[in-house]
Each structure stands twice: as structure tokens, then as C-alpha cells.
Length: 377
Image (cartoon, rainbow, N blue to C red; front, side, top):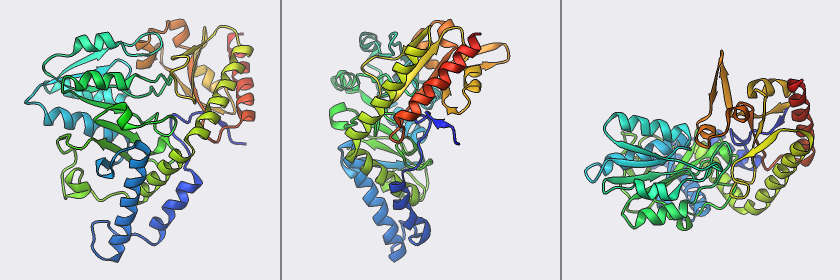
């Protein structure tokens, strides 16, 4: 039997509905969407349809959707593109101490080439300090980049408040919504952001495709140079197969959002309750309410996460800390939340999906509890 899969925040399987939408562009509709003959026209129709499907999920215009190779490219394009396009106005960028490496590494690169980067702290639940953020703003601030929902603990940030704060000062706002899109409502109008990142493989589409929402009128420096694909904004022949899959995945996500959210929350909560009953000295990380419905970050005091994962035979999950020789490397998220070391070193992330069953989480609780008790002995 295959292990129980509780790592949906790492990646998701391709939905059969999505795979079916991709098949015609694997088999017969192989044309280049930039070609004017019938083969190209069929491919262009697929790209245009998918752009509309993504736009419908985000509540934006199709013209504001830019296809990319995934979340990392979207983050790079948004942050570097905004920084370079607005450098004459300022060189200050604000982010949080809670971001994915696809944001933090970009900011570190920009710092090395002359930009000033401010990382705003978060509280013990992972919520950004809004007062500290407001104090960090200067007349040279051009961009604020804060993730919508954290990939490890699931904490959802007050992006709408951040956007309103920024808009009064003419500052662009980018949010990485790779983890939230398809799990909770992601409406760019409600959020008030200028730039938003999506990753296909987080919502049952294939790997290697993503999207970047760019609000109409926002200027970005080109990230990819070449021919005039994507209305001149991102060179390179579109990944028609992946784009068709992303479009269908967004359509399905919007259609089934409430049902999937309820299912994921039900299985996540059942898993959490099972662990709290079965194991002593356990804590749940992240905000108790403002949290993704599928995400459970749990710490077991006095246990090593690496050893725990190896002991959990029959279960696939992720660790929140990594051991290298005699040293322990905690994730940026756990460090930002100041999780005590005796808890942090025993942290694992469990994330359910729309295919997770109650029977699977019940069995997972037993596997984890047995492994923790065995390691403690």
C-alpha cells in the first residue's frame, strides 16, 4: 500500500479533470500559440480560455493575468520587476520575517545590488506586526511583499489592511498566494493588491506552470527577454499543456471552493484532535482561527523531527527542522515565531487535501502517536 499522503502543501496530485483538459494539447493540438495557421489558433484558444479561468478565480481581468513557469518565477518577476521599474522613485522594500525562500532570496539579491530591505517581525502566531510595518515605511519605500498564507503553519496575513496602508502612500503591494489560492477565497479586489503569485502544482494542476496577477497600470521591468509573448511582458513560447491544466484547475477550485474547504478543515481538525488526545507534550503552531483550513503544524517536545519522519512508516509529511550532523537548522518560519528549541526541533507539517479521507487521518494519528512514543522511550 502507498503511504498516506499528508503533504499537500508541498504539492498536489493532478486532478483527473485537469489531466483530461490537458490531453488534447499533448496528443493533437500541438501548435505554437503564436502561429497564425489553424494549429496555432487552436493552441491560442486554449491559452486565452485558461487566462479567463484564472481571472475568474482571482476576480480580475484576463488581461491582468500573466502566465509563468510557477510560483518562484512569479515572485521573482513581481519583486525584481517592481524594484527595477520604480528605482528612480525609491530603493526601499518591506517584507516579513515569515516569507518563503522564493521571496527572501530575491530580497537578499536586491540588497546586494543596492536596495534597502526591511523585514518586519511576526508575533507568536505568525501574524505580521502592522505597527512595525507602518513605522518601517519611508518616502523611499516602493514595494511591500507579504505572503497571503504561510506554507508551514498556515497563518493568514491581513493583506487587505496592508494594502490600504500602502495605497495611501502610493506603495505597490505584492502577495505570494501560492498556498492560499484554491483553499480560501483569493479575490484581488478584496485584497487590494497590485501583484499576486499563483503556483499550479499547489491546486491540482501540473508542476512547471503558474500565474502572476499584475493590476492594470502597474509597471514592471521585463523578467524574460526575447520575442513578444504574453503581450510583450514575458518572452518564451507558452506552456500550452500546463496552461490548459492551470485554467481547468482554477475553474474547479472556484466551483468547489466551499466544499473542498469544509472537507479539508474537517480532516485537518480530526487529525489535530486525534493527536492531542493520543500524545502528551504536543503543541499546535500558527493562529488557531486565521489559518489555512488544511494545514497543521505540530510540535512534539523532546523529539527530533527527522527521526520522527523516518519512524512514521506508512505516512508522507514534512519536517519543520532539519538536522545536519551535530547541528539543528530550524526553518525561517519557526525562528520568526520564536518557537522554543525544545519544541521547534520536533515540528512536523501535516497538510490535508481534497482527496484526504477521515479513515486516512485516523490511521495517521495512530502512526504518529506510535512513532512519538517509541522515540521518547
